Figure 1 (cartoon, helix red, strand yellow):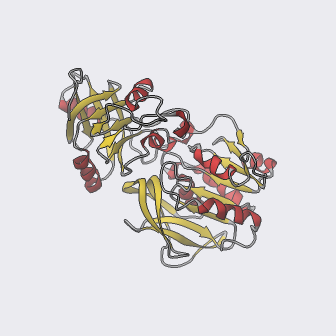
Figure 2: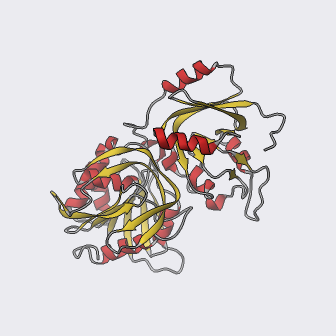
Figure 3: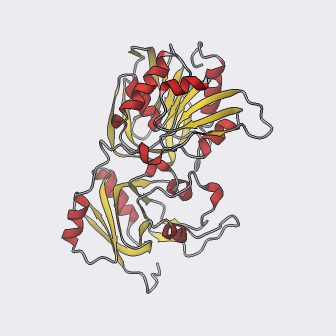
Length: 381
């Protein structure tokens, strides 16, 4: 790899004391977050603008990143959310007819500190073996190695973090059904860090999506008279989402059809009475294999989560809301990836059916939500 003369030495510093040396890239300075890795070979723009990555420094395992540049159409929100970005070989040019700006220039515009030229394979193996941890990126710094480690160790951990308020919309807004598609249902979507492709996917099915702030009350939801309630993805620890858990419990008691994804899945688990726990290094990327236990079908899915639900995997379970079951498992580590209630209209998955970026194997889940709203007393098929 050729490094330009104006690139200064940069350091990626883990809280266990390991340091990777590379070169400055994107904005100069220092930044901190939780070190996580994404296994997708593409989709970096959707990753950068996914609010679920708030307070995380993302390591791209694919070595060559940035070759298609950046464009407004593929953004999942109005800004970049990652705290830092780590690549091995950033592309010096953008070669795509849709590109509007280079990846590095976009990162500079948002003052995102990055690092290039490190062995991302070695870093990924380190995180896989030792778990996600706090990390800092330092470029153009005069700090000693010991001082950098100390600064990293003083930062907050992801466990216990309440971050959804940082990314949730401040005002409600509506995404209407796609032009030419008749309105079939109205859904109240609680924004914990929703991606732009999610309400669009529902709008394509004739759903009028009312995207609501984190602070929305159950009474405000009821006033909308929605046909269903949707709970989005988002950053942070689900154990910190006490108010939203209580909101979901009220939705379940009223038997309003409910669908949760990613963070929303974990919050449904807690609403049902299960614990959540932090995964060693999480699931992130657009190539995660999941088996649907109800059909036996294997799906390749898009993930971004660092926590999981602790529920019985082998048998149906009982809750105060009735019976339920686990519907999906990760084929990599057997983590629970889906839940459904069989006595009330509620289900969830821990991945992204809108698949932006990613495969479209899970797109049927929005159709399943439609079916649930059509026949809410019949449960899932």
